[in-house]
Length: 292
Image 1 (tube, rainbow, N blue to C red):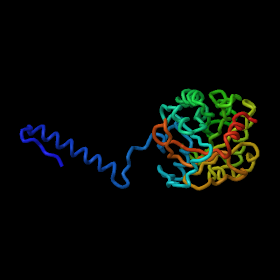
Image 2: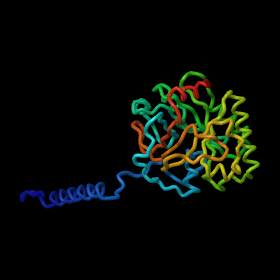
Image 3: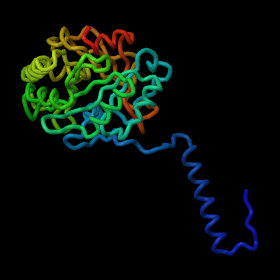
């Protein structure tokens, strides 16, 4: 309760009462059951323009993934070697805080298709390195705009290169549901296999490394026809949110990295960010980084 001094002018009393009422309503809104404390960050946008795609956006478009997947509670794999993936949607990142929170690795969007370079890539790539985060770059595939070799060359020349410096991971081919149109980018399963093979061969010729493949089981099994041709070449980064373990796409023996949520929280990053777990110890992560 509050009281108004009788000598307070009427206009001032009215303004004060409105302010108090507004504060009370704001408090109720933030504490009521089911209230949303903050608006969704830009990364959760489903409708994106060319160049704006990020890891998992295709899953939201084609599989109807909710902005908030079911909470994993105690099943959340927050132990082990933890990492994140980011793009310009996260804005400016405090990489020192990220590393101090226990995050050991990160993949950062570098390119998309043949013409788009993420405008936060350079800052993120350098910032992660300086903070001691083992980092790599990823390419959002657009099989509908060029062949795989062209995009692999663009990626390798625009941040997707590799060096044995104890802090650089091999590049990632992010190949998932098309957020801009037909799920499989208008390619047959045979044509998609050829596209991926061309990207892989070109990237390896440019960098000496096997590209990591990020995908979902549903996309891979549908758009490549459950192809087993990459299982013995590329490490798998499986995206499967809100599950106790990831579903493995056909042809891969196991997962190397698991993206287990798209709505994670990490100090130093504003809003939601993807959280990932590496399938092994830090020594094995460094072995992947250094090709040893």
